[in-house]
Amino acid sequence: FCYMSGWASQIICLLLHLPRPSLEMAAPKPITRLISHVILDLDGTLLNTDCIVSQVLKPFIVKNGKKWDSKKAHKFVGKTPYEAAAVVLEDYGLPYSTEEFLSLINPMFSEQWGNIKALPGANRLIKHLKSSRVPAALASNSSRSNIESKISCQQGWKEYFSAIVGADEVESGKPSPDIFLEAAKRMNADPSNCLVIEDSVPGVTAGKAAGMHVIAVPSVPKRTDEFSSADEIINSLLDLRPEKWGLPPFNDWIEGTLPIDPWFIGGPVIKGFGRGSKVLGIPTANLAAENFSDILSDHTSGVYFGWAGLSKRGIYKMVMSIGWNPYFDNTEKTIEPWLLHGFDEDFYGEELRLVIVGYIRPEANFPSLESLIERIHEDGRIAENALDLPEYAKYKESPYLRNPLQEGAATGGNEAEQEFI
Ligand SMILES: *[C@@H]1O[C@H](CO)[C@@H](O)[C@H](O)[C@H]1NC(C)=O
Ligand SMILES: *[C@@H]1O[C@H](CO)[C@@H](O)[C@H](O)[C@H]1NC(C)=O
Ligand SMILES: [Mg+2]
Image 1 (cartoon, rainbow, N blue to C red):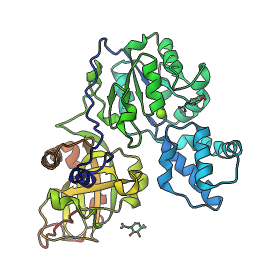
Image 2: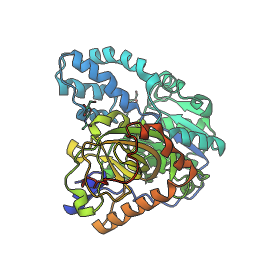
Image 3: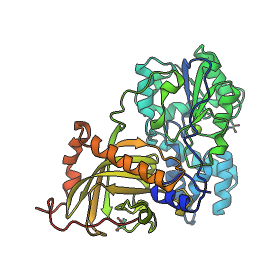
């Protein structure tokens, strides 16, 4: 089977006629009553907690004379600390009991809590609910004191929530409904009027058992059938459409695009997957994704756009896919930038600088190659038009794009063909 992934790997799935789990089954089941309250999970839903797992474990494992394997990091998602610890001990053959190991690494995790970043769309969602006066609670399976440490560095979060409930404040943790029921009770809300947002399977189970509406935001590519009890599955918080649930809509989309805090990456153009765009006719100028695994882990998969600077040529409009790399068990992400310009020759090795300024859509499932190609071209048109808006056009002047440019190279001359993925 194929997991959700970038353009090139989508093509591989299509060519092999492999089913890809759809994220667009997403039409919520009809709601009988309007949502009045929102209940949010913390780890993996609002906070990128997975990121610090690697940061803590890697040095510990290396210090114990073992080789760190980043491909194993996803095995801990949705497990209890005890279960995750047992997996680490077995995978790496470390000479500790589970209790010993936890007592050694728990203090290291506590030190890192201030460094956990908010996931894309988390601050936007909290600000939106606040300005729309929708009451929201935080319902986490962590202990109350751990929750407080984790959110203390996120500006405005603690004050915002009408209620915060930890696993140590109820009889039993997720997948039992207790945490969610307690959150509803503290907000004086009827469970059937509550909308839960959760990234884990036990969390979804807990929300449904509480009689609530549940949106799943799986934090790593998973078989979506694991989340079939959720009322809706979305790729990231950026894709949340509150109006589907009777809540006020976001009003920050412009012409089919969502502005994001710009981010910057660059490096020499490399050869890519060697397959996709010969079929697609969409040449991409690829960067070595393994060199950006940290920054890519901060961004969800999907289609984005921005500006691209080529050191010997100039600055071009660009649309790109961030996907999960099927060659790395879907645990590493890939980026596939498509420069919206006709080049006559390739330019492997040339320095490419990107500033990514907006988001278009999540990855989707396509019934045929034609429909995938049509959609990518539509993404290109959306990006072309949007980049003329002042909101996005201003980033064309980013010094980062121009830094490696040589004098006089920005116009004409040797146009080059982009690589075929
Ligand atoms: C939630 O926490 C409780 C109590 O600490 C624990 O028993 C349970 O296994 C946890 N659930 C998950 C999904 O981590
Ligand atoms: C990846 O990063 C290393 C270290 O900075 C660099 O030497 C190498 O050229 C980069 N590889 C590619 C293909 O960008
Ligand atoms: Mg979670």
